[in-house]
Length: 266
Image (cartoon, rainbow, N blue to C red):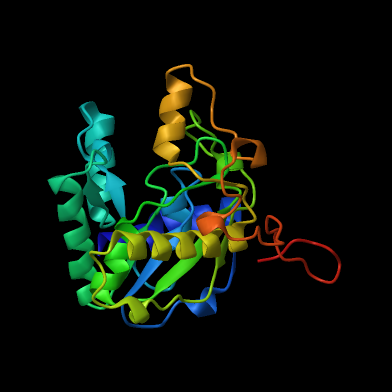
């Protein structure tokens, strides 16, 4: 109930009015049945705008810190996150992360949508980083299709350190579902998990037009935080230019749709 009140009565109408989000490929989301929405992650507001453009309820995994903040702000944030169905996860891994994945599996078993950011954390610089294989386990164990998603412009609207997003158009591009039923029963094969994850990330890259860096975003953030040079991710670093060593797709960052007069619509 709280989810739909926020989306249709309180927060949703305001976001539509101010940011005029546009969406491409909404028809790729099934009207019913389980599916995993796998999105790039550019800003905190990704978790607001992706559910906003969908007709179905979508919940995400959220970092544990959202639920443990102190003071009035911390309690409000925790209450909001619980109200919209966010599932807390300890990004340190281990049993806590396993429990979060099991919660996702239960949601998928109920025929619902489940959102996940395969990079594991926000991109530190707007580029696309290596996906973690938890999403592959989720797909293979649940049998649910994976729908790749590209958030567009959220990093410009809300760069790191900015609390209130800048007013601008926000875009969402949704790709065709990916079926991994051919790997059923192989969820414990780490090579299969990496292959599936790379296929998902390649689909996201093909939608978003982002440059790819074949290291984990958390590793990049740690290097930056400790004063070490960030990994560039280009050919000079001998890193793959696309997930799984695939060729770089010939795509650009999506732009808002335009009407015949050249005015952005959507």
